[in-house]
Image (tube, rainbow, N blue to C red; front, side, top):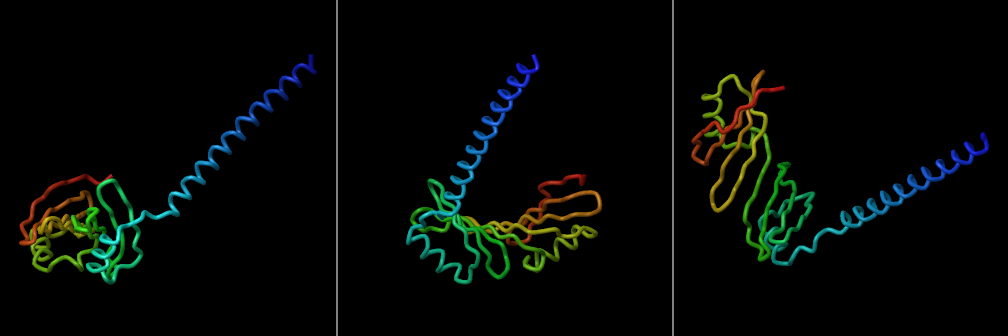
Length: 165
């Protein structure tokens, strides 16, 4: 009987080993596929590259992503993290910039400091689309987060408020 148990144990061991090896092979293939996909940046059209390079001449760390209808460039310019979206013809559709209060227009900054005294600015997201610029300013105090929306003129609107965890 002990021989049967040993044989059964060997069989179970070999079965488990086979399953583990299959998992390792699948994971290796998946990793190889993802590595190849990540190492092959999208083929950005000449129109898009020309438009991007003409607009963002000092861009660094540029990474391109491609979808069916547009190209997206993530990059830094003057130490500001940015994204630009272009259509396939090289037309700039939208830009997004992420920065701190130092880059916020002074008239908006002073209005926020006056209206939301006692709260500090955590970060700013600037959206430019179709000739309009909007600012989403995240404020914080000890217990809450606030997201303030502003237009170029400095019209402020509280768009969200959250309790900190």
